[in-house]
Length: 290
Image (cartoon, rainbow, N blue to C red; front, side, top):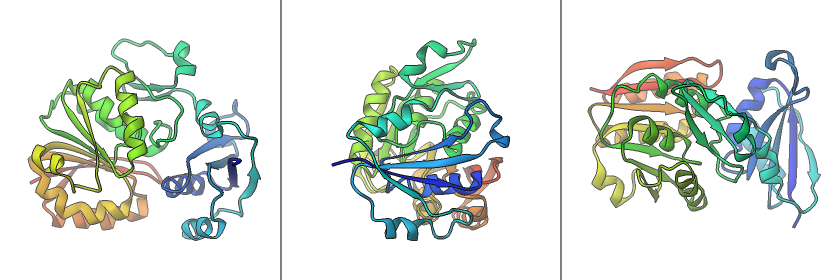
């Protein structure tokens, strides 16, 4: 069966929002500059999404309907090669604080600065290569927390395990990483092994906090939740039950216009905001449980 590709053009903010919204539906999605040599802000962008099974175009249209500025996508059926890997393989190196994310194809381009923490995330079907502002933002904010050395770290919705690997390497601490998707967990486990962090990260397929292993390891001193605004809001009370007093929670995957609703929900659950990494579309929030 041929891989299908949908391509959108429009404002970068709309394309970023669409990329995040497509994460449960597409096998891969990437933002591409029309001119790779041009400055990001001065260049036109497009969003390319790849599907190994022909997508329901009407369902995709409904999913993206709330996002202003997107035109109708161009549809293509592609030759029978691994277009998912092809799409992800050219994403390049991402630096976020001391963290440097790269694919094996870019291993010879690593900057090698003192103190760098290199994380290899190869092209595959799990989201979280570091190129999306939510992942990069979490890493940039995590870089500021090197000195806290928490006991009990949970990466809720781990995707490729980029954040779990970063935490394990930064703090030399055990991490429990979860995802609702079993395929993502398989890839995440491979990524942890590739980065020499397999001995520090335990993986489990779970929906939210609903797993005996998650319950047994609670309460946590640090939780990553780079998911979507809806689940973040829904999980606020459970988050409070699973985080120690004084423990920190990093929230991402929300859009700027959703921040107020999330703030109200987490403050009502007993959290106070400690920090915010600003982004015009994808802020990252750091809370402490009181």
